[in-house]
Image (cartoon, rainbow, N blue to C red; front, side, top):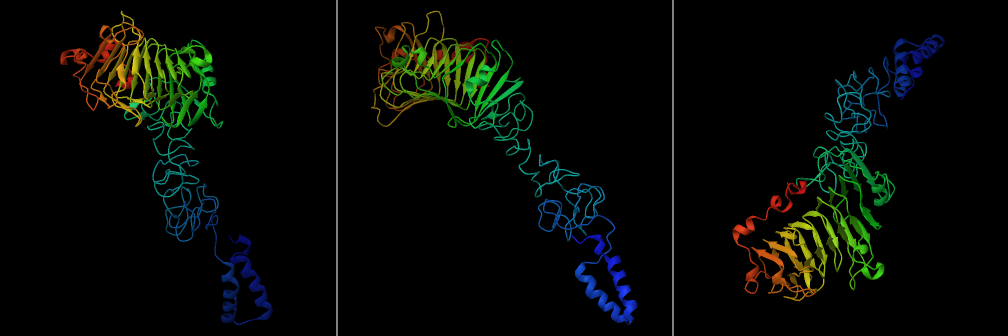
Length: 483
């Protein structure tokens, strides 16, 4: 910028003083005036100076306010937030001057790069803006938001229910389906009505660095609908969730957020005690995360043990070997999940539905499931759709669908795709309990392991299979992940 004191008035006064002493002819005085004045940019400035601004106030190279947005030589002036800055010759205004001579209202960002309200980020008096239509530095949803409206591991809502993949702007519980903060495949990640959001992050950017600490921050007996967002990372901690209802855990992705521990029956003296995660809380939800037991083969080593009512899981992975998923008691619903193991790795007393899940033998074993359902319980472990797969080293025909841990064990497989590792007999005995005396059923199987010639007595009729609805299985409870 050229300070006003070097403007035309001061330079002409010097020239007039010198011309009085030299008495030069008028034409020569004009030539000399041009030689002195042009390099000094002699012009009549009546408003604040226009020109370039390194901080997005105009200038020829700035993204907001400079050419081509702000006219020939940048617009908005040094004080582009003021109402009377000069603007460019014929541009669209400065970095936000409302009455800039270069445009009607300027094209700056809405405020602090918080989002795109109109055009380049807001109609009036912004500071930074961005290129046309960008709406500030990173788009809507908060000063650290990500792509507009996206978030969660794979849905809308953002880390705190706001608008960014790792965004923290916005209010809790906003940005996706109302009160949920995001969706996966069109399904809300949490039930409606979330009123509190807590963030867990290993790097310290959240409210807590440990999942257990986040859970324990809620008072025992709490029924406040609470979402705990768990950022990507492996959280090695033995986790217990009890005495708190309406809790929802959401990870950054089934393979990104991992809850892990490595106990076993051999180490702690009980199968129940080996669980990496034990959830006894009622009305619990979890989505987009992995729960694993890293002990390996050789002993019962539970990844998840569930002992609560109305627990649901969406797009989760349960990883282990023997006794991976212990549906101990209560009622659970698993949708679009993955369970891996080798021996009896879906087992327990509960009424549990696995819908559209992959159940995978990573090693050879006796059976995929081992129910111990009470005789008074109408349904035990039910597989609706999905597929049973195996690693390449698992022999064909070596794994049964189920074996009865308890004499009245209940397991049903409806419309499942069965791999070649499934045995022709389909069901086998356990601890003196015979499969034909248990409640084992099958209907509509497909795939290499679907031959029913040796297990015809377990087949349901079409009318019997039609009764396997969630309403019949769970009664008055309709899992939100099923809708």
